[in-house]
Image 1: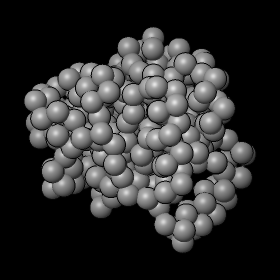
Image 2: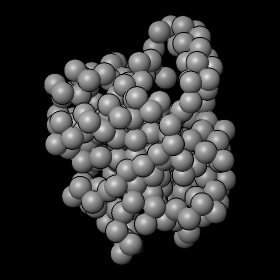
Image 3: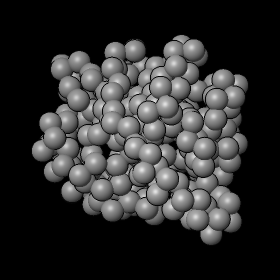
Image 4: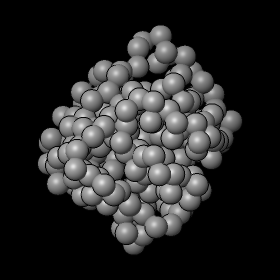
Length: 218
């Protein structure tokens, strides 16, 4: 089963996809499981969970003080703006697991040292919007800390869904099964990589937005 574990809907302030568009795109691309991980918003899960077409893992991408953290399996919203430890603790209290998102993306990643010094449950080893170098380093970092891995497209529009995935066992029937497979190390990550031109364009856009946000993480 193919699963894209990092997708943004229009509940993210930079997302363009409705929940319905995400589900349809996932079906068209042969995905059996997704996680809608909006920036600091848990609203999409309520609309997506009973769609009857694709398994949806409850998730969110939390903006901690130091960078972005993916939460899977949660049962509530997670506040933004806390320290890494506070964010991880809040995710655990909500019944979920905490993964370091795209750790080498310098304007929103946590950075290597923060991942090594924190009690993450896993690391996002592949991201469709990260560079080849960033993805290679993230995979090596996950292996170094000996943690489970996730992967996702980080799609903000429907056409990009499925550009980062994990391969999971085909006998999965619930989101709990899918998340258990990830935590048991059964996820095989792969993704496209962002090219140089699009990296420069995206980086410039992100830096400008970061400045206008008052140097806050998205």
